[in-house]
Image (cartoon, rainbow, N blue to C red; front, side, top):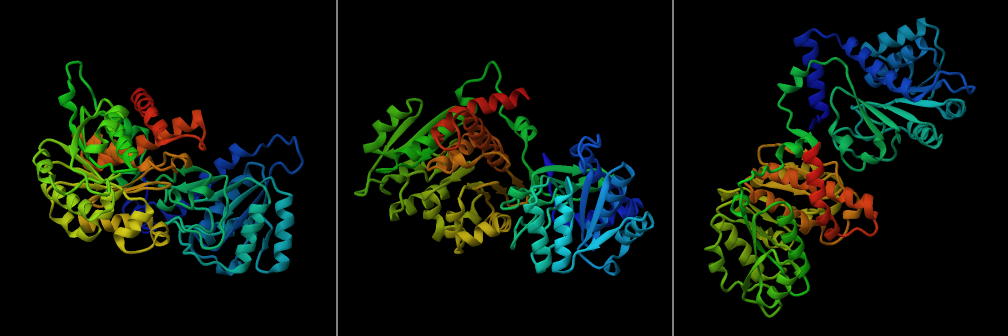
Length: 521
């Protein structure tokens, strides 16, 4: 599992490397440039089989990102590559460690072209045509979303050149903390990010443009980030394998917990069935589904492994609030999953609040349960048990009183702030699902694919998390593991069925294969 950092955290690590370990900044820059050059060596042949096949166009700005590019250019030249340098600044604007490396290049006799106007762009366009690969060192982690028209046009030309691009640290035009893109950004083939990945590289829309992500070793002591209290991480197979529930030869169903699923309504029975299947496929020993009595038989036929409780039914086909007191008495030693197919009624609102107040174990609230919770969010703050909320962007906007567009643009910030304010584990679903808890721990999930953009996928996920909670996995880990497994199973299903035709029920069927594959890694 890999730590990811903000720009501020990375700057602090750089500062500490200099102050506490006496690592000169110019040495860190040297190592960064070498890391970039090594990637180019692996991408571009020097066998001379084709004229210009060893020609590299290096585009550099005035900051430390440009300095890394200067170092890379020097090493490429020394290894026999034909380097063409394009500066998107005036040389007089280069300072600090970058200036030291610029002066070395000038003493080596490297010619360069400034790209400051329209005529310069034409020269750069020809340089791109005659090059086999591009190194992007225009902007680094300091970029905050604004660039001039010349830079925009230069990036457009690089993207249209159809040349492989190696981006330094962050593809130019991407905001490193958020993954946001204001107008345009470099579409890189490979991104060499230094020491630790920047968090924005794992967030949309940046992930589309990062290409293969390579971690550049700049010889920063590992003890630095181990002591830095970095709370954001990217999930991986090692994490999943570590936390997969273990089973002994003498185990029985009571060892793996009991999930109480409350949901289903007329027309939405499938949501609850998918959630129940997710909980059982994730390993829960027992599952009881509390559903409207008119739907109980259908539920049992669809999922014979589940037990059912026949609840009073409202005129609208949802569970009625009457009789819910009996359900609260059955919460002991059970993990509550509430919301899939529950319906959006006053009764649903009352049911969610009553059950939450009575929980004795961590719980999951999804779908209609989230809508029922909207006017009762302070209730979450007073609970002794941790609640996992699993909203998609639209539901998150509803809970926070914002818009889906705002949530999508500020996914990390919204998830972190909500989890801390209400003391919950927040699973903000979508491409690169984010899991955040009240202590500030954050996981970003890399698994999954667009085939999950089908109704019912979220219900399945809620059930999976509930099934893991029932097996006494802590809420944050259960949420993170559930999200990773859900996405991994979807990737296996996609490889067999394709994105267009895979269904949430297919993902459920591949969940066992996902867990088996991870256990064997």
